Length: 192
Image (cartoon, rainbow, N blue to C red):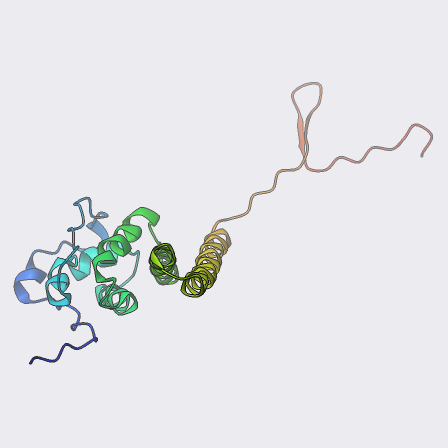
């Protein structure tokens, strides 16, 4: 009897044939092809459906294809064998949420994993045959949902930090078309 390992397969590597088809890093656009439907595939078959390392690099906004490839491998690890058919969801989240750097790529992956966890726990809660099991899955779903919300907030804060803040005060246009930008303080008639 063959032993099934729970460790994911090694990440796909770039061979000479694959590398020759890659375009220079600055000219690669976000992939527009549809992610393969991975439902019902084994982990080995799943590895063949993962986009090329260069496509992953662009999809997840990372500097190196190697780091993006490892990010996809951690997604496989995080899903585990029972939920591996949701890998295409995690990859699609990379395309949908358009991470711009490695931090955002990690957060997007964690957001996707948390979503799968919440949905899995809720499904098991719904299917539970007794109240104790149902309550247990309800608590798990609630904790996973809080983690999901925390990751969304972390992504929002990270993106806000990289966006320049622009503040515009009061704008007053005087007679003759002159404008004053900023806070205007005027003295009352009785002040001197």
